[in-house]
View 1 (cartoon, rainbow, N blue to C red):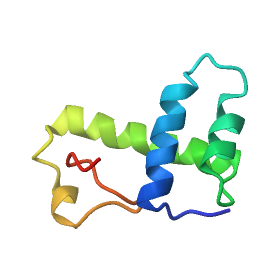
View 2: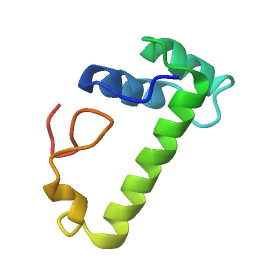
View 3: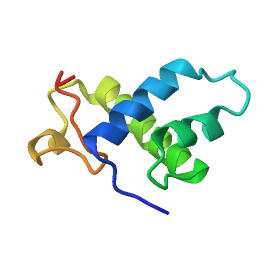
Length: 84
């Protein structure tokens, strides 16, 4: 199981989430296949859960008030500060 995510993997992951919505059959298998690089269905499900948690924290605390914002990014690669 591969736990670190590069910026490129994270971008492919986000694009695959948009392509395969929550009602798509075999969503997680398709997302894992598109991300590739040894990511399993469990890896992408865990990554999604972490993303949901981050979004919930932003909504709860506001985008600029999280103490994690000063630690230089996330373990998932990339950032949420508008770099696309």
